[in-house]
Length: 239
Image (tube, rainbow, N blue to C red):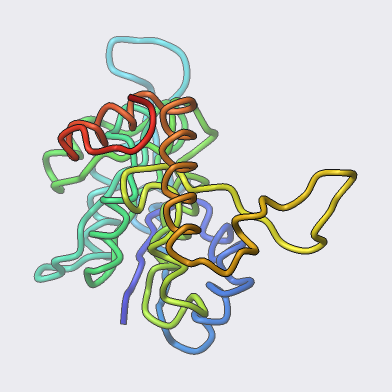
């Protein structure tokens, strides 16, 4: 079973929205599991302190390396080979490729930072992979962890109703997803593109690929450049 272990001082934030919809149903059916470890349970003082003032001065507080290390060791004892992730704005951007790799494994251990962050020695001491969900600063790592977990859980076998749902979507082929439509046929004078109701599946596939390429070129030039490089100039639009 794919298993997620969260090191967080706010364990009540989980499973949160992951307890609803498809992820929640899969959780209830034993398709995946989640547990939390509160670093405060591994503090040594009567106040259950998990932070201290930053070395060198400055505002805020920093999460202690010793307390977090003990919490991580409790969440992932010796022999646990799951990747250990630290949610932080300075981490590598999360990608669909990395999500697929994580979803294909045994699960993840996620450390959720708070305050001004964690003592940097923790990263090397416990082999943490620093991950960011975007160029934004959140109140803590928990929200980022929920994003990462949602992205992974939806790819687990049996979670989504149609396996194809995980392959024909944004980033699956290095492109943004093509536009989607459904009934009614006409909305405020705008019709569904006729090709989508033509019944010609080959033409529909070509149209969708062209639309995905056009959207990627216009909205994400970074993805478009990577796509063009990977396909040796074989894109059908945007020449």
